[in-house]
Image 1 (cartoon, one colour):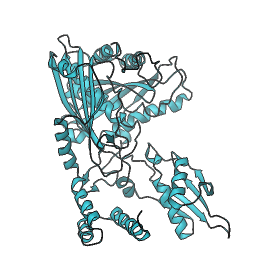
Image 2 (tube, helix red, strand yellow):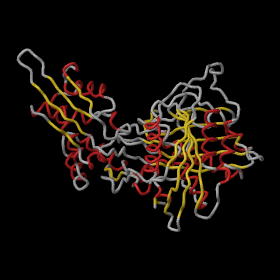
Image 3 (cartoon, one colour):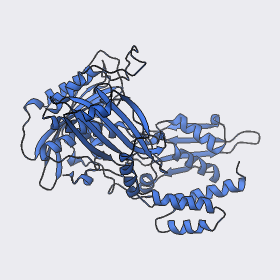
Image 4 (tube, helix red, strand yellow):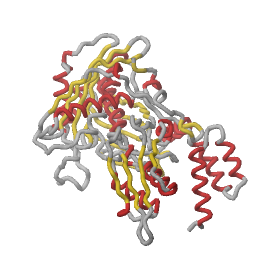
Length: 495
């Protein structure tokens, strides 16, 4: 157990590190080298050198060439199947850290009321949180007070997207109110908000698949390199064993490896899936092109394959969290019909792309019609979306808005990134981590299948398909494949 003095000085050290600027970061490290914390200082100094986006890239490249660390799921004989394939396609996809970028920065109002002799003090808070219960518990633990003495008033949230699951700003306001013995209104600056987020974890995906002589999928290998500690991945960086086309490809392997990270990550709308759909559905499009087949027809064929069960679960009843291939086929066919996919025009610089994805109990497919000019500026002319979230759309207008919002946010993700240099986040505001502008947002149409299943939510599944739908359309229009996000890293930008 640390002594009170060491604990206090360690807190002071942590506060110094949080506020340190790019200009004095090396100076701080040098000062610490001559303090009683020389071991901590050395570790801190070394950490700065590896908290660097260029370092992460080199580490990922090495890990992709090495044997994977963790097997998530494998069946069949992936190596033999790839070796025996008539055609093998390989590609590496990259997606960055991104911030939640809520329009309303983190904030809390708190009032501390000291109790009379023999009575406990009371804390009253007004907070926009996605999880106020855990926030109250975190404040109680941090301040050392009973949770029953905390009253939380939940205010409207000016954008959450998973960021307000982390109630760090509640603790900060509560601590201040306790110490100044006066009401406190805490409002983070945009710069603090951007540089102290719990970021969507970035990653690197090594993809390899085999096709037979008839252009059918025979093998799929996916090696995800992301962040974490050994076999334990960082929050928001996990990938499920049923990642498409798990269970549908005759031979399948999904692996992970992790790069050590000292940066807070968290959950962003459609956690994980907001990146994995881009990877999987873009690579699926690559395979269709390599097979000389229509991407829609190619995916429908895969969805028609007999499912390979998880060993030991052959007789397990399927639930809402398990992929239902027929429901996925349904939304793909509906969006193809509404967008006139079968009769789409093919002309230089303009094309359509399609993608579908199942996550968070919802099925969505989307088609994007894009134009790319001579300067590689992308204009999305129209988006069609089709969803299946069960038997009842309880609030049609809100459901449609969720569809619109998922498309717009997904398009924003395509131009965003958070990078690190010497341990410091480089982006500070919307000029470096932009959102879509109103004049860049296309007309969006959302259609529904009311299936014979219990209703589920749709805040998450509307987002993932738009990224690969746009990327696949760009390839169809230009012959250039977007494998690295943000768009600027692949030579593109929004018009």
